[in-house]
Length: 267
Image 1: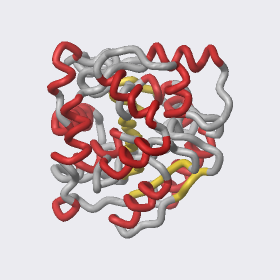
Image 2: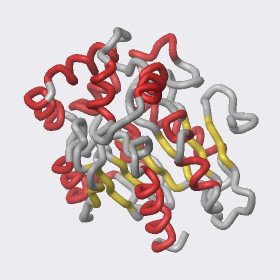
Image 3: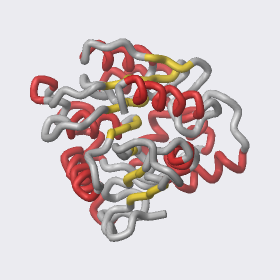
């Protein structure tokens, strides 16, 4: 359900029957997606364990404002969306970002603090350039299709499978995810590639968990390790998984690790 009183940005909410945690969770999606990707499994799973779980659709995504000028939206605009959602919630939330959403979370920490953060298959603070070159040599058709989707064109269904999944996926589910996918802002992609990378010296420090997937074609494990090393941490890589860690088979293992880590941090 959409959070009441929060209309211009889509904010999905799953409330626990009995709350066991004072801090809410705020999930931030990656490029070409929306809050729906968290509502498939994660929101209810965390609500069942006593968390009040929210998922935000950034401007130009899902049912949020801004579709008419998507291509002009920047990473800073997405950060402002997160700040707006944080201001709406009763307590500062723990921020969990996937892929582009992980970059948005990192940039948010330049302007504000957070109780804790989780980066899942996140764009590294060094940006997308290295990952894009790797993809160009390993999966050139996938890079071309991602560029086509970004511009509002059609792409091959199999490209979505390559981009998000390593394990077998039911064709009906793949087609459903394909229909839910959407174009992405060129400006935001360029921001993440070169023009608006995180300034780690300006970021508020917060407990951070860095997760990745063994068979991620978009943000491969070496990029995840690079992110962790930047923050003086060790990355955790999930075996036999692709980029769509919240949708892939075994998603519950990822959710359980986040829940365990948050408990270890005292939440």
